[in-house]
Each structure stands twice: as C-alpha cells, then as structure tokens.
Image (cartoon, rainbow, N blue to C red; front, side, top):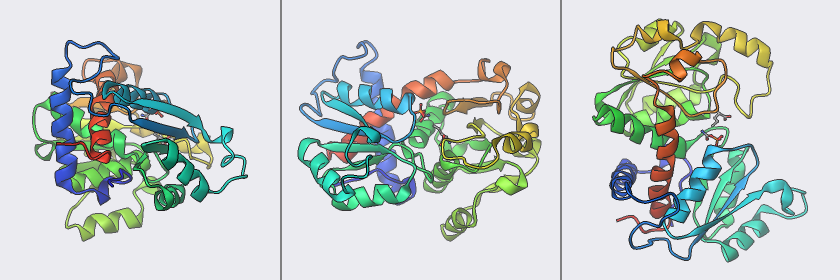
Length: 309
Ligand code: CP
Ligand code: NVA
C-alpha cells in the first residue's frame, strides 16, 4: 500500500511516474467535459474520504474532480462533525471505520503526528492534503506546471521562492532534492528554513541558496513561487510578520531582475505578498497552476490505489 505524505519519503522514480501519467491523462481528456470519466474508468467503484480540519477551496474541489474523472466518488468531512473531532472517539477506531467504508483517505490537518497516527491504523492509503510541515500534492503539481509552461525538465530551471518558510516551501525544498533543481530562497533573516530542513538537504548532498535580499534571490530565475505570508497555522503577531515581509513584495520591479521570460506561480490563496499587477499579469500562470492540481492528483490517486502503470 502506498501513502502520499511527504515528497522526501517517496522515490524520485515514482514522483516522475506520477508526472508522466498526469501529462498523458491531461492530453487525453482535452475534449472531455468536467465530469466525464477517463477511458477505462480506472477507479470505478472506489471512494475517497476527504477530511478537513482547516479551510480549503482548491484541494477540496480538485480532489473531488480527480476521483470523479477516474470513475470513483468522494465524501468530504469536517472533523468537527465526527465523534473524533468532539473528542469522543479515538484515531485508531476512526481509522478502522474509514478503512471499512472507504478506499482512500485524504487529510488536511494542523498536526503532522495525526497523519502518522492515522497511517498506523488505516488499511487504506492516506494522502496529506496539507499539514504544518508539508503540502506535497500542491508542490508535485507545481513541478508539473513549471515543466509544462517552460517546456523543460525542472532540473534545467532556476527556481526561486520569495516568502515565508512554511509547509509549501518545505515541500518545494524536498522537491528540489528529489528532482535536482536549483532553489534560491528570498526571505527575512528570522524566517529562514529551519535547521532540520537544512540538515536534511545537506545530508542528501544538495544545496539551497538563501538570500535576505529579494533582488539577489530572483536574479537568473526562470520561475518565481510565492505563498501567503500568513499561513493557516500561524499563531504569532501577524501584523508584525507582514511588516517584516514588506520589502519582499513581488511587484513588477522585482520581477524585472529575474530572467526575461520568468513566470510567476502561487498556490493561492494570496495576501499582500504580490502586487495585483504581477498576480494578474502576463507572466502569472496561477489559474493553470490551480487546474493542474486535478490532473496531478488523479495520478497521485492512481499511485496510492496501486493502479499507476
Ligand atoms: N493551494 C491550496 O491548497 O488551496 P486551498 O487551501 O484552497 O485548498
Ligand atoms: N502555507 C499556506 C498554504 C495554503 C494552501 C497555509 O498553510 O495556510
């Protein structure tokens, strides 16, 4: 049984296989409408249970479409509607029940430990739909989008991240090790990636480049990624944090230091980290990026269900 929890724990050849499958499937359904099922209905009769402990628009809708397009169905739960969320039922019993009724489980949670605990008791695959330390389905899809738009393997691209050291960046760092791409990070000194993440990169004989000057980080970039300065799990002084990120705002001027054909990507939702001009401008491909989550998550589901050829 294959889980999809952290990119760093999944073999690169499997991640590449998922991307290749997604590309094929996306091409094959050019003339199909939203809910039409892929030829062969590969996940016919299967049910994905998705549970959200935190807000979600894209992850929820894109997983719904992904399983539908493969011939299966989904049930979306909020943890506070379950006995689990009310504190009346254990993770182990809940996991057994989910495994009895469903075929796969996607969880968005504010606890990495909870994912591990569920994994222990589930007899169906679990997919991490965002946790404090990782957003793997987003970032694998972002690798797909960068390659699709730039028409090059990501290992040949200079990738830049301007923003907080959060779950999306942690997964992007994992991707940079797995797919061997150069990653330059621009953030204030006290928001740099943690020691553990840096040590893991070093142990894998790779390097990330960290700059406290946004201009230096974007020089030579082919793709600039960003995310909200304030994440769902942020508990500190939000006003102060936004202030500290002020000079890291991605505007037309900052984009001008990157390569001429540099593109802008953002997982959404957005805050004040990017100007409207850039976000809605020609270099931005954020809507295509959001749509690609459907395509890549279909192949992630096939991987987890053991149907990826
Ligand atoms: N990018 C992303 O995961 O969006 P949601 O929080 O809306 O799911
Ligand atoms: N870093 C953000 C990503 C949202 C998709 C958060 O965790 O809220």
